[in-house]
Amino acid sequence: MRPYEVMYVLRPDLEEEHQNSLIERFNEMVTNQGGTIESTDIWGKRRLAYEVQGLREGCYVLLKINGGPSVASELDRVFKITDEVVRHAIVRLDK
Image (cartoon, rainbow, N blue to C red; front, top):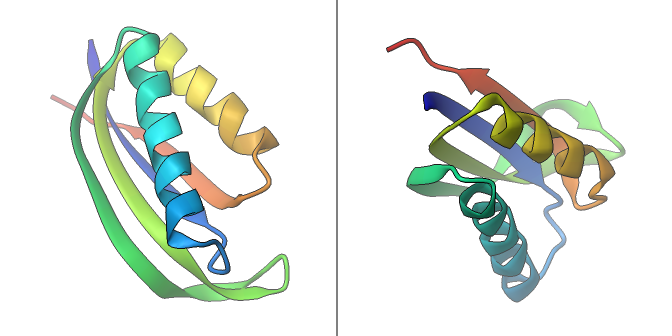
């Protein structure tokens, strides 16, 4: 299993309950694909470096996981089709 660092930005206008359900859904995807979650760090609402989709701020979430390449590719696929995700980045860490 490889270590990954996943950063994604959710829309700032989401209710906290909906935001938490999305975070839980993404965490469940990792475990269902055979990966493990080291930590989930919710940074909260922060200003974006530049305007994205008409938004100036977003809710940042940092996720550290271990898993195979299929876990990362599935997360990437789901992030792309989820309207609430403004931006995302998945980085494989060196051991």
